[in-house]
Amino acid sequence: MASLLRIIQKWWRRVSVAVFSEPMTAIDQDQEWLANRNRFLWQRLYLWLWLASICLLTFTLRDIYDIFFPLQEFKKLPEPLRIHGLFINVAMFISLLVYFALRKTKFGYRHPGLLFLGSSWSLSLSSQLFATLKGFALPDTLGWSLLFFSQATFIPVCWPLHLISQAGVLFYYFAVNTALGLQTPLPDHPEIYNATFILYVFWLCAICDIGIFLYDRLQCSEFYARRELESAYHKLEITEAKYRSIFENAVEGIFQSSVDGRYITANPALARIYGYSRPEEVTANFTDIEHQLYVDSGRRAEFVRLIEQQGKVSEFESQIYRRDGSVVWISEKAYAVRDEQGKLLYYEGLIEDITQRKQAQEALRVFFHAVSHDLRNPVLGTLIVLRNLLNNQELGSASILVSRRILERMVQSSDRQLNLINSLMEAHISEVQGVVLQRQPLQLYTVVADAIADLEPMLLGNQAILTNLVTADLPLVNGDATQLWRVFSNLIVNAIKHNPPGLSLTIDATVTGDKIYCTVSDNGVGISQQQSDRLFDLYYQSSHHRHTLSLGLGLYLCKRIIDAHGGEIGVKTALTAGATFWFTLPIN
Image 1 (tube, rainbow, N blue to C red):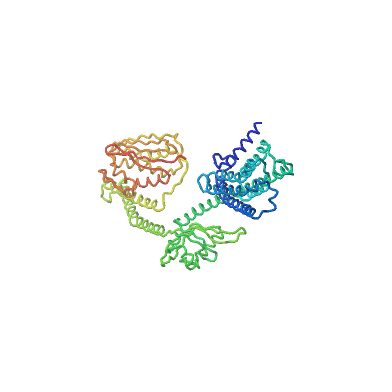
Image 2: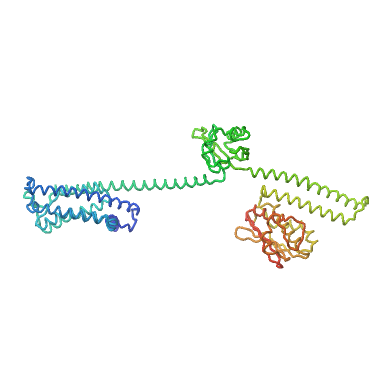
């Protein structure tokens, strides 16, 4: 019983939505589909109203003709119908005009189902009401057939709506006429129903409703299929727009080149690299890449050979001619595109302008040569001589009369100069090529301990007190032990050099989220905010009263090393309040 009630409730909800066109719930239906079906019903109702009006007009013209020229076929009709048939048709025609007007209103647009029922019943019940008032039952088989079939043909949606329209008329005919005891005006068949009549009416309604149901389901399936197709097209358009944006706005040149050496496609970046204003100029002008593009025409053959062997090329560097005849360097990354049978279709890849990088590398080589031969080698030679003199004095040789103190100061000066030159070279290497890390899981405790042990003579010489709070139970970090040793060493040495003797230092490391937070703190003279903002810049030297022979490379290199590890570095300080240098390292 409960199951039957649920079925009835579900059916009633469907009928309510269909009739009153209010998508209050989405049970078994999609609101978008309901709205689409209501629009279809509203549009087709207009067409059906026109059809019904024209049909009524023809029957009205027939009745007018019958007034002047009596038709033989009307002799069997009841006298009231012969006399008042014209007025019934006119009344129905006026009612249709009313529904024409209602359809254009906001109410009509929101409730096309009500207009459907109203217009249908105004046609089917008008003659029934007239017959009841005249005291007889009217089995309007012809009118019902025209009405039901025309509605099924022109408005083939929402079968419950059609069923209600049909049931209303049939209920009135069978129930009201039976209750009033009325009979038909036909002498041969005065009863209001018989088996043949009932079968005809039943199958008339059933055929119409089944056809509407099937068409409705077909239209629903088509709607969802079309919506899925539109959604797929929309996603495709978004994807195409995204990749088109990447293609158009990419910094690297993107290309497709044919096997015979022509450019099939090119993006704006490639056009700029080649000295053209538009990609179309690249595809139009380059018909022989081998001889038109490369300075060394053999590079195209090498490009093809490498792709044939490896399936792709990477960092394929060549000199090329630009449109104005100038020569630049490019680096190509490309691969071969083949069809399902393995036939080569075209080459596809990226091109990067590396002219500046090549110039920087050449400048770096010149710089290294100049520093090595013009600065480093003379200082190194002087240092060797001074150390030999110092060793000879220790052995008792007095061939050169120079005091030991002067020799020691000269050795210290040469050591400082050599360290500065080495730091300068390393800073420029990291600037051009980046910091190279040899990563492995390591404990910071070991790195800090090694740095402190190496600096023990400096700490003693400057009467510095260092407290190490870094514990051995910290999580491992994935880092380069040598480079991190340099960071701790530079920060400790930096604090000692820039503060008076007797400095107190504290090294600590704690876990903060997914990183380790390291600090090197001192109780020295501190640094102003203006100076701390530029401490990590290349070649920055403080105007502070602490003087030292330095190019400002130590903190710069510390920042480069920490950045390469994926961390951050900074300083917290104020004048006369000491300084705390901090940096973070991701946990392994």
